[in-house]
Length: 593
Image (cartoon, rainbow, N blue to C red; front, side):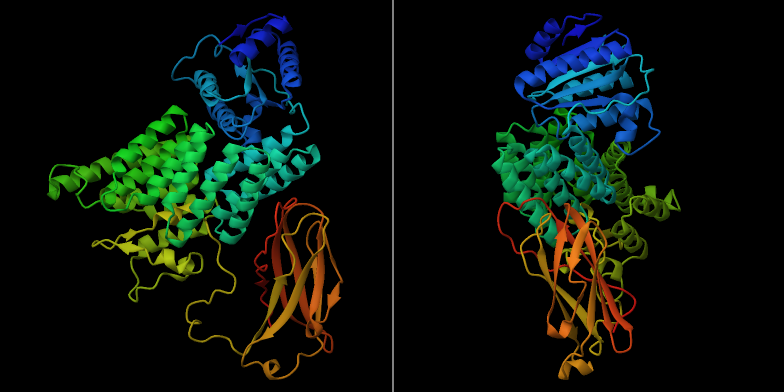
């Protein structure tokens, strides 16, 4: 570590930075210090051909989307940002506004010390250069990133933080802006990370096919630009998609772990090790205790609190569900059960504390739920336990999480069928793995906490399964071309499909009119089509992201609107290879034929 106080010797500072990859500048007036940091960063970046990114500690709360953070929380936001995509890409990172005193030592138990120590830990063994500016933090002006691509990376980091928190709703707009920023800058690596995070967001929202398509595209782009850590992350996310069907793929997760290790990405290897352990934790004879302990050590080495929290959560969950054959508490029996329960309680409490520190309401809600289910004494101490957990899920828009709380509170149904709110969101194969204890507590599938799925369009409501509406007609949309890309027309076919009991099922369709409307930055033509003649529209988006289209089917003879549907189509930058997407899913309105 090097400390350059009031020194204005640019050459000496540059030599120190290139030798140690870390430079801490303190004591200078704010404007002079910032100018000096910029000059050193430019010197090194221009010589090495690297991008430069700037962070101000005072702006950390705003950049993370959470205004009004405490200094400690702002410091954590900076470290988490630097622990993301910046660390795995060679670059020059300037962190300015570190409070005075943090550069003199690394004291324990203070926000300042944890910031500097966290930055050092985040950049350990990375190929990036880190410049730290120490100040009294009185300057409140915002500092903009110093190159055209920095905004895209900052947007990616903010989107990743929202996904980590379990709030993917806020990630979509950030990712669309990030794709545009990287396209403008011509940064193919940045585009690859944006597509990857888009795929991760789709996985979190339960859109398995969209996630699979985007993650495959991201993996190919990472390979094209030689981004080995990114390729490993994409492989890991693809492997996690298998858990949604209730059948995890440990071999694919093990391969992702090996890819992370070969790329030198210790944090990524720790996450792949965790999900591999979770995928096998319920196998008879699997040494889950040893593996969870090893994973916890890995996360401790890279100072990843969120990873540690999820490790403790799954370790506690496994311990609470064991039957005593793991050897905890002697030979089993009442004493062994009590000891296992107490150890699980300690792990749940540790996970809950870390989730709160890491500002992850998704993990906090699931830990509260499992802790309450496995510890009756804890649950009965709080008569409002279900309402409290439901409130946390509601805060991040996780209706699926709320449905699990409802199930836990209501108990098993007499007919053994899952509630509608779960059946319409999760695959049947996953819900088939739902179990119940002798006390009537649910054994919720582990994979349920990996996604926040929305209801499937057209899923029959209770009582409708045996009485299908054969007398109605519905609209079917088919995407005829490959994955849409900006400024390239893609064809969409619209058909009106009558049910067996509908009069049109035995007679030709009348000359209905289908009117198409784009609800975003795209064009669609022609404006009208005739389904009876095979209505076909050309959809031309002008930017990547999710685009909404509205189709209105009318009877021109009476001027009656028969049905109106909306569809969402994901548009990504240039596709590395041909792919046949699934048809866009129409969302019917209340007005139907």
